[in-house]
Structures are given as C-alpha cells and as structure tokens.
Length: 198
Image 1 (cartoon, one colour):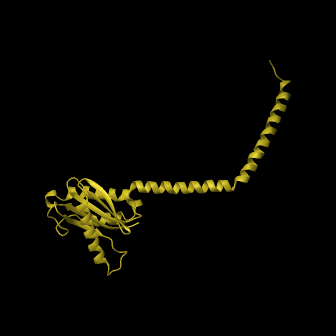
Image 2 (cartoon, helix red, strand yellow):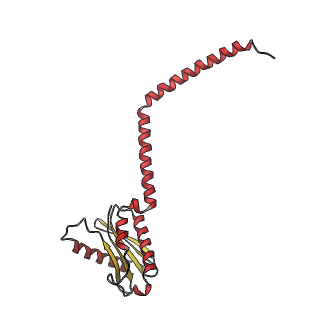
Image 3 (cartoon, helix red, strand yellow):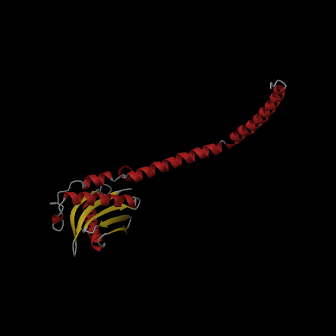
C-alpha cells in the first residue's frame, strides 16, 4: 500500500489551478521521477477538471487509483495511490487536507495561487503520515486489530479441535464420576435416614 501524490487544486471555469502538491516517488528510478511527477500533476488536474462540483470519484489508471474530491466551493484535492490502498482512508485524507487548507489559506488566493506562493506546509507531512493507513486512520487501526483478534481466535479454535479426542475422554470420565457421585449420595442418604430426628 502506497501513496504517490497528494495535490490541492482550485477548479476554475475552464481549467484546474494547482495550488500545492507533495510527491513520494522513491519507488521509481531516479531518471523517471521528473516524468512521473509531471504525469501525476497532469492527471490530477485533468481529473479535477472532469469531476463535477460537490462530488467525489475514483479513477483507475493502469495500476494506480486516483481519488478526487471537488468541494462546492471548487477547492479540490487528488490523491494517487496503488490499488491496494483503502479508498475510505484516501477520502478521509482528502477531507482533512481540504478542511485544513481552507482554514489556513484565504479563498481569495485560490483562483490565482500557485505552489510557490501558496503558504501551506502540511501536505508533505500528511503524505508521509498516511503512507501507513493503519497508523493514520483510527478506524483502519481498529479494523486491523479486530482482524488480528479473529486470527488468534481462529487459531485457538483450531488448537481446541486438535485436542478434541482428549476432551472427549475427559467428558466421558466426568460422566462416570457423576454416576459414582450419585450412587454415593443415594447410599449416604439411606445411611443417614435412620438417624433423622423429628
């Protein structure tokens, strides 16, 4: 699971304006990185331009998934991830980034802003933090813990079934012990019945 790109755009009337972007291209060779970055920037802008206002979408491009969220105020964000990365976590990240960005950067600067002039430094931090969805997202972390508990429980049930024959022997012995105890109780009751005082 990997995130490659996280970008914030303003969806204008005719084109998307890139405001800020962060990339993690460490999995690509050094000589490919600039081309890959340009392609991701182009793809992100194109997806924002083609996504309607106030909607979310996921677009598959080869082995990548591009998740986009265009708010009603035309502020938009795109995250490019591999196909294994959980979609819900991507949209949680996009919500968080857009909310934080809109609080820190004045909306007057959105239509004319660019990556050099936009003063928002947290994008690289978010991209790094969300590389591991289990650590970044509380619900994913809880789900992972539940899955782990299910595995442990499943292993316990398997080991219990492996010992099945031994448990059956114990049950048979306890049933036998139960019959002896009943016989002892009956005998004891008969013996004690002669000594009852009224």
